[in-house]
Image (cartoon, rainbow, N blue to C red; front, side, top):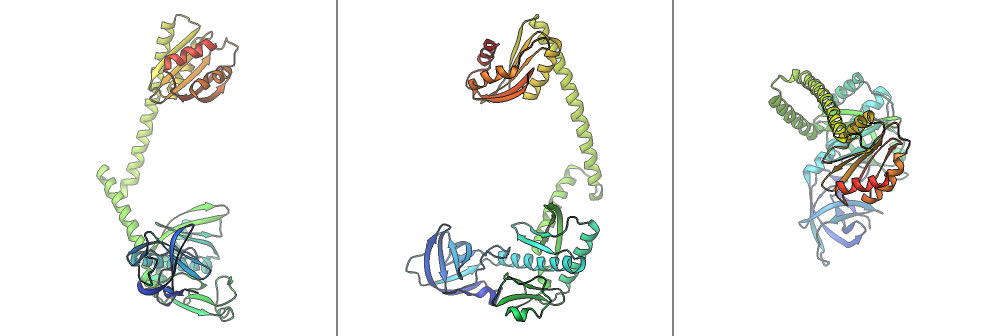
Length: 395
């Protein structure tokens, strides 16, 4: 039995009563099939409605072979004969605004710039369409956005009509119809004529506004991100909050924030560079101290606490440059792991990868490098001093 789809008769109907056809379960969970429903199922790029049936939450709605399945979080008694359905009006209206806005945006791109839309996705926070072009200029985007919002402000009617494919052929359709029977046409006079199964407002004015957020390349096409309706206000609120916080941290007028933050980032990078240079100098001095204490030992080893692997690498290079006849074993002992650097001076002819391969199983580790310099890490299955001793026995 086909479910009567109230959302096609009146997209603004959010409350309804209906008889239960059956309660069943599939791989998605427990579902209810009704004689009629105002719940819109997932389809055509538009997500499903949410709401309740007799107070039980509906978390998903799908159409399967003509029946609309309402997936519920709780349980309805098996002998339930009738239900009262309540659709979340905020979610429904949001989807209506985004979907209608997409129709207008796609129409302007196609009609005025010969750029057709190839796909549409209505996400939780933003909407995207894929456009059949490899590039969008800022000037073109500004023109399209201005034209789209002019159409929205015109408050033109948005009509939906059921008709045969033959009758639909009398309209200037944007793309060929993919059905053979009756088709539902969404018509915005002189703007868009399109076969569509989604929910739409009665007029373009209810879309309120559209704002482009940016685009990215997607294979050989462009993916445009945008928002419509109340999502525009939400995005504006979020950006205003960020700006307010920025002005609290950087007490400058909004117009100067970008320049001021740019200067701060530049200064921070210069400081980071200076700090890195000073740290490199300190490591050089540390290497000199280690060498002076080693008194020309054949194996120089040190165990550190929580030393970054990059510091071990720099220290190992500095030591081997000054000690061409020595092996170097540097271990960083951390809470749950050991990291290491194994190196040799230029006068030693030995592949340190061979030593590392024998040592790494001791800590279930991995690593590698050049014949004269390797690094790696693994689990702390022993203390650092014991690991260093085991490595030294392999030399």
